[in-house]
Length: 134
Image 1 (cartoon, rainbow, N blue to C red):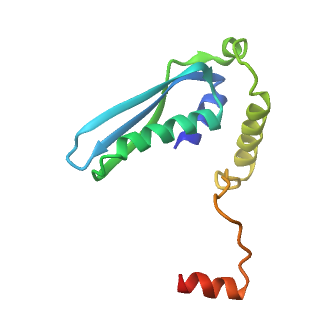
Image 2: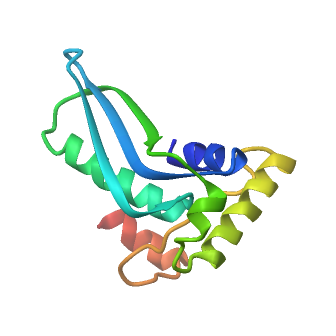
């Protein structure tokens, strides 16, 4: 959801100052949480990080969730925001390249990954047997 929002921002040449998360619990009780960035952004990494923190906060109660929505607020034109950008050109170029690949080959053509913590395992047969027992 967060990447859909940032992709939409980039397509409209906008940056956001605020990430918003709307959550509706099973009893139809709805809350909106938000995080404001020090500087406006349109990058997936910053926006996704903020929405991940908001989601962790909202779900920490363990209550069943009925609906989750993600949005952006405090929108500014990209040309104005670029004047305040303190780097991030490489991250922005990566996001634009991913957007183009998804446009050409479909939304599932490219997925962002993350490093998995812990020791790296080479899953040979004996490793798989050990995992099955553990």
